[in-house]
Length: 108
Image (cartoon, rainbow, N blue to C red; front, top):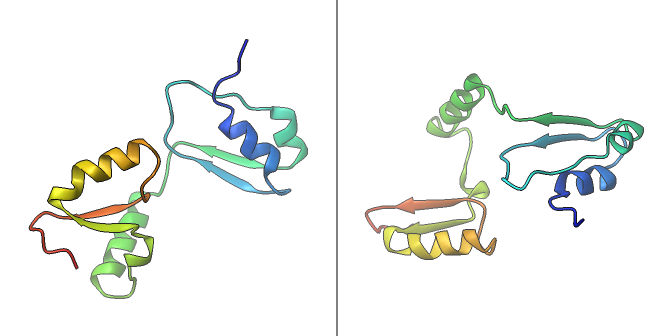
């Protein structure tokens, strides 16, 4: 039987001792995890959840106040006409992880 998934298991095997791993999102094929390996390496795994609402608001306030520049975390800025190509690239895992769309076409 062919094992599918195994991404989390691979990360666990390659993680440094006492690493903290956040598992966000998910996929429909499932995954497997070697609990013994994770325990031996002293790993902490957190599934689901995510930033608390106050974290989001704190980040948004910092951006609005000019204390935080979000552009380093943006992979590409595109116009509305480029959205179909960006979606196709994302489906192929061939595009940047974050894209900002300027719907009026005025790309900075």
